[in-house]
Length: 230
Image (cartoon, rainbow, N blue to C red; front, side, top):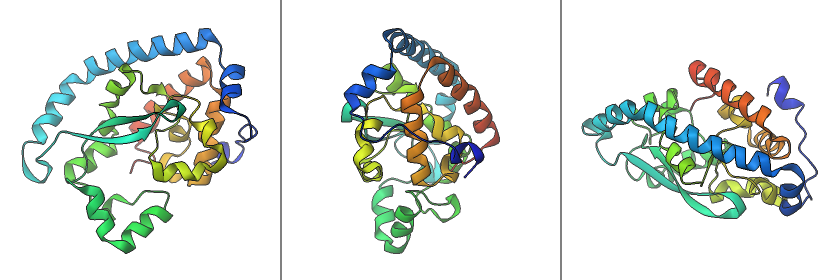
């Protein structure tokens, strides 16, 4: 845990999501954030389009051959389920393969739903490269454009992870999930789940244009340094 992580204290956990939304977000911020999301997603898709073509070509051969995209149901704002898009970094039927190894699956759960790449049987060689530079996340610009996600926000989670937030889940689900967020720039996969909860909820209660811009800038450095990339 780094120094910034250790000092984070989120707002009181019994605050209703409706109160949270009304108290901490102005209409100007909401409108401005959505406008930035739309512009950013369009620019992101245009700039990364050559990468889309190159990555598509990789999926025509070898162990990576198969579907280009991986989609999975995640929880969005107000608990609405949506399909998140990623470039597929794993073999087909990855979840089934992991669950077949009971020891490894239990380690996956105990280790905050992640495994080291060299022990994860699901990740392909091409997928390992994509993850190292966070290129597998690029299709989420589509989710942002559709309004299911924001450029900045808590990471969208699956049902298994929702229980980690316990009675604080309504706070997390009061905002749109993001492509990047406070957790990612404060350690990402190097941060345990209890600390991750505090970091995600810190953003929920302190979100602003300044914090969003700060996170976007820090994300560039995190991606370049490959810090916490699994």
